[in-house]
Image (cartoon, rainbow over all chains, first blue to last red; front, side, top):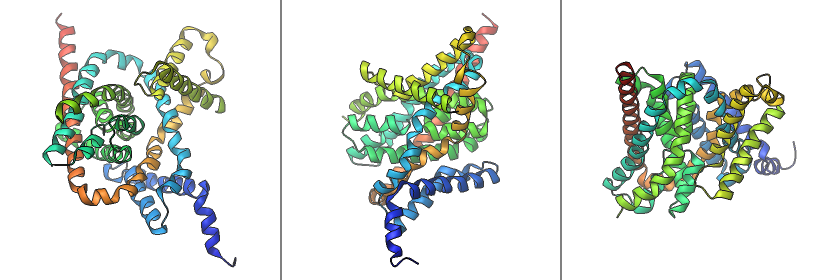
Length: 240
Length: 128
C-alpha cells in the first residue's frame, strides 16, 4: 500500500481516464438494463446515468468542471453524430420526400407550441424573467439552445439542464402517450419526438422504430433552425 | 473506419467554417449533415465516387454505429444538473411541471398536425 492512498485519488480524479471510464461504464450498465427491460420507457439510460454519475460526483466532492474535462471526449461526438444522421435520411429518402409537406406544417405548429407553451406556463407560475428566458429554447439540441440563451443574456447552463430534462421527459412519455392517443403512423410519432425532445427523443425513436428515428432526426435538425429564429421574436412579444 | 470517421468530421468542419463565414444562425453540424447527404446522393449518380469511405458501406456503418449509442452522448452535458441543484431546490417543482406539460402539449400538437396534414394531402391525391 502506498503511504498516501489519497494522492492516488488526487491523481486519478484529475485525469480524463477516470471520468471517461465512469461515463462509459455507467452508460454500458444502464443501457444493458434498458435492453433487459425491452427498452421500457422508464429504464431510460440517460436518466439513470445522470443520477448515478451525479451522486458519485457529490459523494466524492468532485466539481462538474473536473468531470467534464474527462467526459468532453464523449460530448464532442454530438456534432459528428448529427452529421451521421445523413445516413438513415439517405436510406429512407423516398419515404421522406413523400412526406415533405406534412413535415413542414407540423414543424411550424410544433416549434411554435414548444416555445409559446413554456413561456406562458412559466409566466403563469410567476418565475423570474431570467429563468423564463433560459427555459424558452428547451426543445432544441443542447449546443444550439445554449447559443440562443447566450444571445438573450439568459443562463446557458440552466438552458442546458432544461434541455436535457425536456429530452428525458419527452423520451419517457412519447411511447405511452402515442399509444394512448392511438397514433400508429411512426413517421408522425418520430417527428413529434424530434420536435419536442431533440436528440434524446431521437435516440428513443431509433430504439422503437428506424423510420421513427429518421423522422425524429429531420425534425430535430429543422427545429434547431426554426427555434433559433423564433425564440427571440416570441420572448419580445410574450414577455413585454 | 478511420477514413469514414474522417469524412464525417470533414463534413462537420466544412459546415462550421461555412456558417461562421456567412454568419448564418444555423448549427454547423446541420450543414455537415446536408453535405454528407449530397455526397451520398452524388455517389449514386457518379459511380466514380464510390470508393474509400463512400464505397463498401464504409460511412454508412460508421454512422449507424454512432447513432446506435446516441443516448450516451447527452450524458456529459446532462450531468451539469449537479451545478444547478440550488436553483432546482428553489424552483424545481415549477420548472419540472412546466417542462412536462410543455413537452406533452408539443408532442400532441405536432403529431396531430402531421397526421391531419398527411391524410388531407393523400385524400387530395386520390380525388384531384
